[in-house]
Length: 158
Image (cartoon, rainbow, N blue to C red; front, side):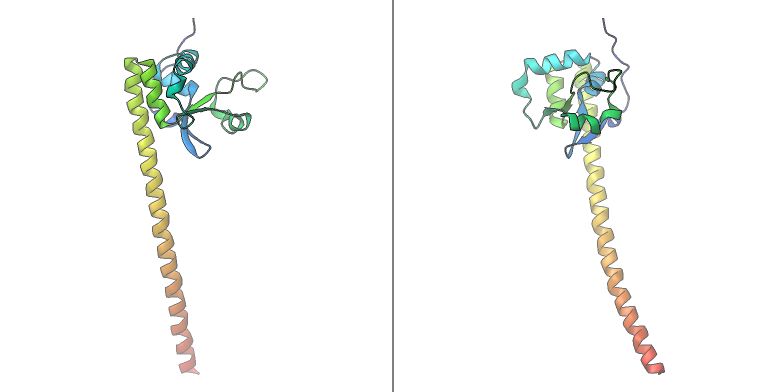
């Protein structure tokens, strides 16, 4: 019988960016839901029609190399035993529905809240970047005006 890892308190630590999306890998999701990874993947396979590509996808070898340091199920040779599945925010919710355990439901709420916080943070960073660009353009314009004033003063002094 396999042991289930202790549940983490912060789902944020399991969210990774892959293929331009924020996802949670199957081993991390299983840990958060308190089930073995094999049980999660079996439940997903039994309900495959609930998991379209935008909810869940299997990593390619390239994807796996990108997140290799974050995946703990490696064989001794440094290769993956299997290519993990990645669950998007919607896939996380659907997985909780197919598992239908109280812990899965509780953790799905916490995970979705983590995704929402990350989305807000991303929007805040984008907004800050726009403001910085506006300020920079303003300073450049003022620099040109200040240079013109100094040029005019130098002409008057001559």
